[in-house]
Image: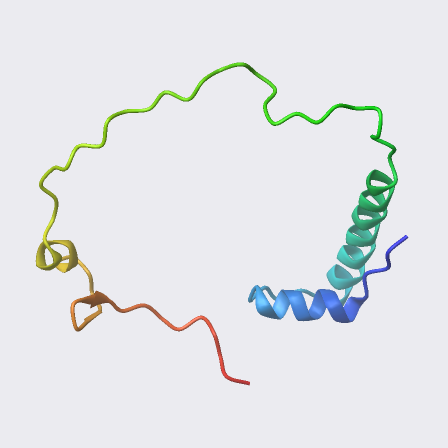
Length: 98
């Protein structure tokens, strides 16, 4: 069974910007370890006798013809945004240089 450490849960919670108590870290480490153990069981299932399939149903995709239509221009698309820069939406950075 794969063991998930509290340190890994701590790292993941920081990446997700979720504050977890030590009790929650212990709880989630155990729960994630159980899930990973289940995944290990699934990996060991013998499926050699089962034919490959790409689709379960015989439905076909319903496609439509692409039609070029008038759309918003850049100025109109950005008009309700609080933060823009050089014709683009300006959003907070999500990556940090460590």
